[in-house]
Length: 63
Image (cartoon, rainbow, N blue to C red; front, side, top):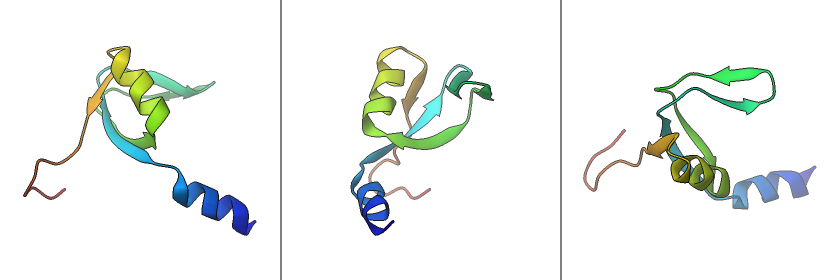
């Protein structure tokens, strides 16, 4: 169990804002406008597909 926790902590995530509704799980729709943190690879896939945009704060800005 500790290995899973350490593995999850090492997984890099990126905040993204969805531009379109997406199905991140088979029967679960996540609506557009939602901001969430996804594993870096999945975030890149959605951004490259035009379904999301980065939601990082600008320098000096806090969320």
